Length: 283
Length: 319
Ligand SMILES: [Zn+2]
Image (cartoon, rainbow over all chains, first blue to last red; front, side):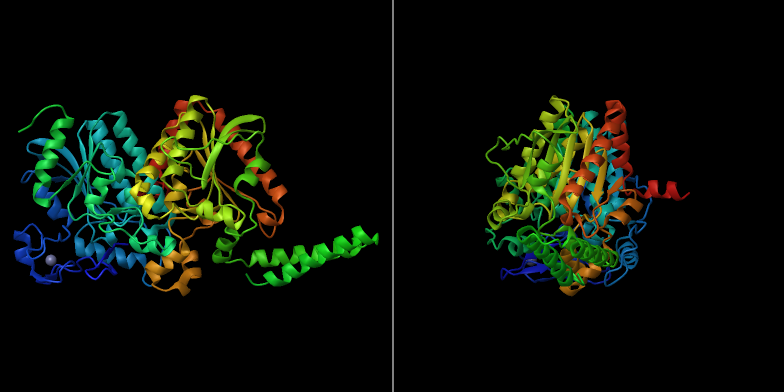
C-alpha cells in the first residue's frame, strides 16, 4: 500500500485519483487545489511546489512514445480471483471498480511503439488500479512482453508504479515475482536490453523482482523506491527514518539506480539509454 | 487454541509420573499409558478443530523444530559457510554443504534462534541483504560442485529496516530469485514453519516445493492483511483464512507438490519423527529430480514458474 510522509512528518496513505470527472485535484505535497486541465498542460506537475501527480498508464505512454506509434499488445485477460477473496469488500468488486476507473483490464498497459524511431515494447503500470499491485494478470503480461522481446529482439521498457504484490491474490501474487524473474532471465539469454523506469511508488514485490533486474534503471524525480513501507519499518524496528528516505536521490546515493531524471527529461533520457545499449543512434 | 492449558496440564502430569517411576521404583506404566492415550485423543480433537489462524500460531510455535537443530537432525556432516564476502554475515539465513541419506547437498535455511539472545541476533529469522547475498554465494558453490540445493524456509519475511533499504534488500531478493531459477542443479524447497512473502520466495523458486502439514506460506502476514485491508487488527483470524495460506489450499492451487505429515498436535510434539518424515520426503524428491537431465529440468522449471497462477494456464486446465 502506498504510504508517504505528509508535510507535518506523519504518514498518510495516498488515495489514487478516484474518477475522471472531478475538475479539481489536491496536491498531496502542498495541498494546493489544481485545475485538472491546467495540470495536463504542466505535465502533471504542481505549479506551486513542483510535486509530481501520478500519470495514468495512457498518459505515460503518450508522454514517452512517438505520436500514433503505440499499438497495444495486451493479452486481454482479467483476474480470475483465484482465492475468491473477500475482505471488507469482495475483490471482484474492487476489480470492476478499478477497471471502470482506468479503462484497463488490470494494473498494466503493454504495447509496442517507437521512440525517436527506435522500436520498443513498453509496459506501463497504472497506480490507480489497486495501487498498481502485481497479481496474475500483471505477472502474465510482463512475462509475455519479456518473451516477445526476447524472440523479436526488441528492447523492453518497464515503467513501474506499484505498491507491490496484489494481496487479494495471496500466494498466486507472490509467485508472479518468480514468473517475471524467470521471463527476465530469458530476455537476458537473448542479449536484448531491458530498461526500468521507477516512478512513484516502486515498492514491495514489484521492486523485489523484475523491477530491480534491468540493465539500466532510471528513477523519475518524485519516485518512492523501497521494499518495505515506512510505517512497517518504524513499527517493526522502532528505527527513526532519515530525511529523504526512499526518495529517488536516496536510491541514487545508495547505488540502486543509474540516473534520476525529471519528468520532462525522461523521454530524452530513455532515447539516450536505448541508443547506447543498441550500439547505434536512431532517428 | 482452545484447550492448550488442559493439554499442558496432562503433559506435566505424565512427566511427573515418569519421574516418580524412575526415582521411586514404583511401576506406574499403566497409568502413564492411560494418560498418554487421553493426551493423544485430546490433541487429535483439538487438531481437527484448528482454524487457519491456529495453524499460523502452530507454524510460529516457539518449540517447533527448526533452524540448525533441525538441520543437524535431518542431515549429517553439516559444514556451515558464513559471510557474503561483501562485508558481513547474516545469522538469520545460514547454510552449507551436508550429507542427506548419503547424498551430498547444499542446504540453505532460515534461523530464528531459540534463546532470547539468539532471537535478537538473528531478528527472529528475518534476513537482510547480507543473508540473501550469502545465499547467492552458496548457490554458486552448489552449482560449481554439482550439489543439489535444499532450501528450508522459515521466516516472517525479509527484515524491514533502514539498513536493509540502504543496502538494497529488494535488489538482493530479486537477484536471489534469479539465481535460484537459473541454477544448473536440482533444487528443492521445504516450507518448514512460516513462509513469509519476499523473504521466503527469495530462496524458494525451486524445481519442487514441499510444505510441512502445519506450515504457512503467504504473500503477507495475517496481521498485515488485517491492518491494510480490514483496517482492523481484530480481523486477523479472518485474514488468515481469506489468504488461504495453509498447505491444503496451496496444493489445490497447484503451487506446492507435497504435504509432509506431522505428528498429531504438531511437529513440536515429536521432533524425532518430524525429522525422519522430512528426511524421507527430501530424499525421495532429490532422488527423482536427480534422474532428470539438467536441460529438461531447467525447461520444466521455467514452465512451472511461467505458468504459476497464470490466467491462461488456469483457463486451459478448466477447458
Ligand atoms: Zn503542490
